[in-house]
Image 1 (cartoon, rainbow, N blue to C red):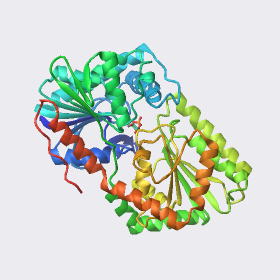
Image 2 (image 1 turned 120 degrees about the vertical axis):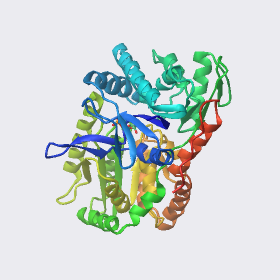
Image 3 (image 1 turned 135 degrees about the horizontal axis):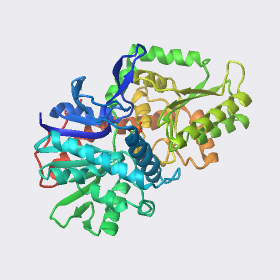
Image 4 (image 1 turned 180 degrees about the horizontal axis):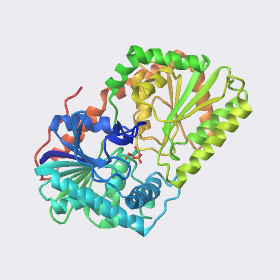
Length: 474
Ligand code: G6P
C-alpha cells in the first residue's frame, strides 16, 4: 500500500530480540528517535523503514503498537562496512570533533553507498504520489539524492540528530562532495543548532559551488534547499507524568535506600560512548573524594552505561578503561558497603530511568560533543518539585537552551570539580531558581513542537509533494 508519509531511519523503533525460551520478539529500541517521530507517524498513518538489528533475513512488514514497520535486512558485510565501519568508524568520530580518530576506508564507503541505495529504493517503492519522506541521521545522508532521482515527485526532509562539523574537519572526508550532494536531494535539511546549519551552507558554497543566501541553497535546476536548526526535545509531559506516578516515586525511594541513604546522589546516564566524557567525569569525582572535599559517607555517584556498538574496537577499549577506573576508584576510596561509584552496565526501561532521575540530586552530563543530549532534558522534565541540580557540558546541544545549568568544559578537570562541588553544595533557593527556568524551556519546547515545526517548514519549502498534517500536541 502506498503511504503519504514515509520515515526512513537506520533503526526501527523496535529491535528484534531472542527471548530466554528461544522464541523471537520485539523490544522498543533505545533512544529518543522513537518518541520523537511517533506522534507524526500516527497523525499521518505513516510507515517506518529501518533495520531491526541482527542479520535475520526475509522479515516481513508488520504492525507494532499501531505503527506500520518495514524491516530492512543487513548482511554481516553490511554491518561491518556500512554500520560499524563508515557510520560509526568514520562519520561518528568525524562529526563529533575528532574525539576519536576517524578511519577512512574505501570498502566502507562502497558499503555505505550500497546500503543507502537499498533504503532509497525501499522508500521509493512505498511512497504514494507526491508523498513526504523524512530521512533521519548520519547513516543515511545519501538517501535524499538517491530518492529524488528515483522519485522526483516526492517532498523530502532530512534531519541530522548529531552535530555537523565545521568545514575544517568535514573537508578531511575523501567523499565530502558526495555527502553534500546526497543531502541536497532534500527540500529541507534540519540540524540541532544554528551553527551546524551554517557549517553545511558554507560547505555547499565552497565545495559544491552552489549559490547560497542565508539558510537557502539555490540549485542549478531551479530547486531551493533550506538548511535550518530544529533543536530536538522529549515528551516532557510524559516524563513528568511518569515521575509523579506512585510506582516510580516508590522505586526512587527504594534506590536511595539501596544506596545507603547518602546525603546526596550524583547520577550519570549515557550510552557507553567515548563522546560522552564518562571517564573524565568519574576522575573529577574521585579527585574530590581524594582531596577530602567530598566524603563517601555523604555522596555516591551512580553511573549507568548503556551498552552500545560493542563490536567496534574503540567502544571495547573504552569499556575496559572505565571498568578499570571504577574498580580502582572503588578499591582506593570506597568503604565497606559504601562504594564511591555504583556502576551499572545495562539498559533500563523508561520507568527505571525516571526513578533514577527522581532519586538523583545532581545530574552530571559532560559530553565532549553531543548533538543535543536528551538525558539532560529528561532529568529536568522529571523534577516537578523544581529541585535537583544539572551539571552540563557546554559542548552538548542542550547547553544552548539549558543556560541555567552548571555549565562546564569537560576538558577542564579542575573546572568540572568546582562545578560538581558547587552543584552539590548549592542552596535549595539557588537550585530551584535554576530548575524553574529550565523546566519552562523543556515543557514549552517539547518533542511534539519539534516535529510539528519541522513538518510545517517542510510543507512550506520546495515545490514538491503534498503537505503533511502536523502531529497533535499532547
Ligand atoms: C545516536 C544516533 C542514532 C543512533 C543512536 C544509537 O543517538 O544519533 O542514530 O540510533 O545513537 O546508536 P546505534 O548505533 O545503536 O543505533
